[in-house]
Image (cartoon, rainbow, N blue to C red; front, side, top):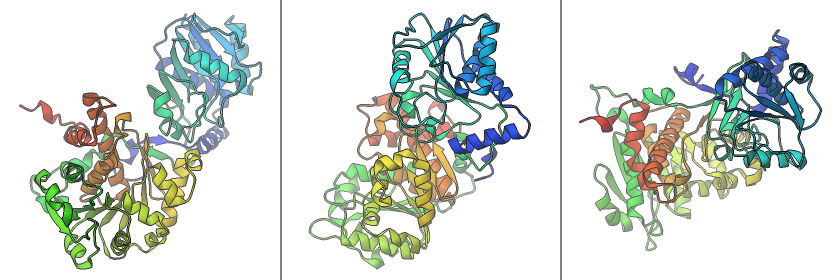
Length: 510
């Protein structure tokens, strides 16, 4: 358990753990047939059925869930037909299939000429969470026909063709609703999942989880971090520092956005440190934050000065470094010194990550501070030495392995964000396509530095920051659209996002 609110967190379970948990539940006295019946009841009650209904079944227990659901539809007087991918069944599935035949439910065999145009709802029960690889042959054809049918599409447990651990796959069912069974799996959130699942719901059928699960962060889990007391001052909410920028990274407003993101996220005091040559360009965009000019060379790149950096970081609780700072020997000196000397929470992003990837990852093992790394997929590939396709196969495990090996908290950016310290794993499901734009990662670093100034648990600070960033991005996309929104739009919606978390509609106050 991660904090006092852990009992309300939503569980997310790996495919392996779910399989073991299912087997243990059966061993403890609940027959697999009973679990299948419960799954069917959950699916039946979760859906607003438009009749007639086609139930497309594979050969495993996922198909069995479909047969059991067909029986409930029949009893409710909802016209339905069962489609078989092939006449092969699991033991429990065969039991419910035989009852379907006895009750006169129409059963059809799938073929290349199968036509779903007569149905208003299609229940996808082809493949379960254990599926991996890509769909081929008749299964691929049937999935393509389901997607083109125009019907309301429901997937049982997970969309057929989608990997339950990675959220990857080739041709997959595109569902209007996915009814997860037992617990959510990582594949409901990661990688391609958001493009394939419009809506999802989980139904509990009484399976006890065999190992520690992952957790999905919801607003109730992080709301306590944003409660403020009357008897408090700015020091209670953290002095933080942001170190970044160079001549090449001359977007003064972008740098100011990072500072604004920190302030809007609750930091008590924000110090923005940039090379002297761009300080005057940044200054007009800063209001509440303090600006520090750092020594630089003729090329506008930072020159590391130990005394200057230590003065900057005096009394700070968190610092973020690397955003647009450039890759150089001086940046390497800065990162090395911070890891050996700083005692607050250190967030390393962008060019700071590139320094570590350039043969300096061993510096992390000498850190005197709490370290949070915030890579996107390609940055994590450079850090870990693993190719992107290998990371995509199991993002959570590769992130856990790296975080444990180097003693850091890793925030792996993606459609859903993975946060882990090598033991705990939490996911955030917030965010939108419009956030795939320059500066979005910088805004996240600013938010994270702000939250880390008053939240001492780096895992929960990272989770809260990712949630705020994603929620603010979703609000910005509603206003500007996915194509036209900018990172600054996300920054401007941070107050509203935090208001939603704390159930304070600040924009309704007259």
